[in-house]
Amino acid sequence: MKKLILMALIAMMATYSQAQKVGFKIKGSDTVLPLTQKEAEVYMKKNPNTSIMVTGGGSGVGISALQSGTTDIAQSSRSLKMDEKMKLNDAGKAFKETIIAYDALAIIVNPANKVSKLTREQLEGIFTGKITNWKEVGGDDNKIVVYSRETSSGTYDFVKEHVMNKKNYATSALLMPATGAIVQSVSQTKGAIGYVGLAYIEKTVKAIEVSYDKGKTYVAPSIANAKNKTYPITRPLYYYYLTSTEKTISPYVKFILSAEGQKIVLDEGYVPLN
Image (cartoon, rainbow, N blue to C red; front, top):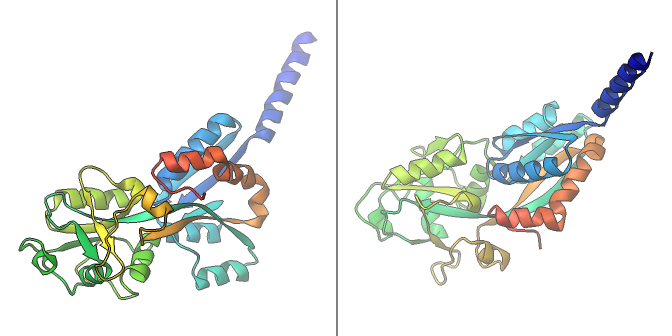
């Protein structure tokens, strides 16, 4: 009899434990990916009954997954486009937008490249294909090889709008599936140029100073320069989620926005909200 009661208690406890377990998925921006992975790791250690699955693929991929119901949070390095908002609204899916951090977008070249600073106008010329040789911007006589993210990337859209003055990328630009692939390609190609979030900068590439006042002042990408707003290529990083799942997701989002969560933002190479 005691054995039966004990077995029943164990079964009840297991059922209760299952009922208390919380799980959700986060998908999207490769820029936000390392930050989300770390935040989720720390949060799950503090909350063992929570399971968070984090994957990248690009901002557009995450937003599409939110629309189709295959992710709970879309992480994005850009704001929602009008057609994406309309698609969610037409489906009766009310959503929330939360800025979780900021990012300084770095322009990177191969360390062997003697060019260390460029104006926005020069960057526009390079990424649109009007400038094709480094000697045109003070470098060696060497062909420029442009590396970009794929069209599903929020960073692809951000660079097009804020660096290239909404002009199209050069047809010769090599589109890469992930930010890490840009870092690797630029590190291995002498004439290469690309762009990555600040957290992705490694010693194998060189981040250059940029000028948005036609060459009067040049500023290097850094957390300090992003915080004091002197570095011109900065952007917010977003989480998008449906209000119908807010109760489940809210404790995790609040953790990221907390002092502890924002310290992780800084530690991981991103720019905190305050």
